Image 1 (cartoon, rainbow, N blue to C red):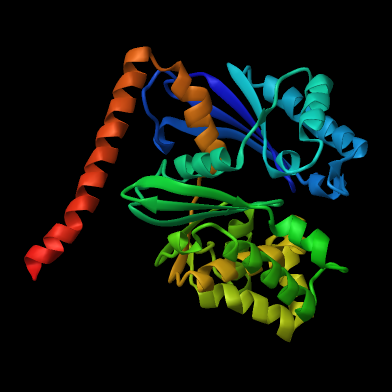
Image 2 (cartoon, rainbow, N blue to C red):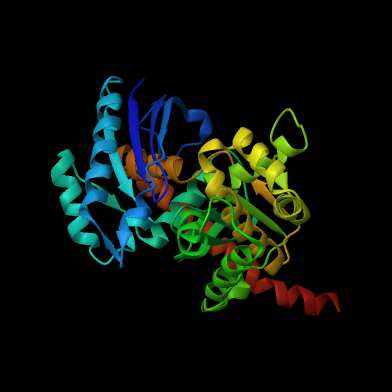
Length: 344
């Protein structure tokens, strides 16, 4: 069974995951078709190296050092293919092209710079590899950005990226380690202003939200720690996210001790991530945030690395099936008003 290595160069962390794939010639994949052999994360904090909009040389050196270490570890697994992709930290800086080129020269291999739309879509592909989501909103709170994806009839639409994440919120608004009440309010207000500026913010209103990425998992771990749960919850209600934030205001000392136990590497970004999650849940009227196990890296593996290996006939069949599903969804949507009239 072949191994595939995926390196995710993010604003907060740089993570290597090596997957063992049962059969890399299939037309489509689920979580049952691969398993993780290695999952190694380095908290590089690369967004701190963006100064006046420019990703500075020290950041390039730091990123290159981490990437070289990951590549060395990945090669021990005799990977059939190793890919590196980057997200908001390199996408949003003013010298994006130059920074990517410098990193590629330093590590001796290409880096795929994902667009905001690609990042949101691939997150959806990964999130749905172990479950079917018919309708809802998918959120990915990263270090430097937050992706929103509207889901209808099992398909993703209106993929957007808001250039504010947990780490960038911390860097821009917090003077110490944990935000004060005023700093927390500033984070939430700044984020919601950007949400309101979206072309059609109401498109993301849904009863059920789905979350991927480290920030939502950190919130779930913190909830489990505070309430002495043996396992982290599969979903969080808005009031449960609010209770994490309330604990900080009521008892900062207890909050800090619990956070160090739950998510030691994310103590400084835990609250900003919870503030963003709470703003989205309450602002769009969601009843719960379901925590997804898989996300962007699995989506990249399946669609960017494994899908191209399928035969032309398999790819054509998959595309035809997708088109048929889209047409069926459109037909159902068009027929809905007619059924309502007949019901009257």
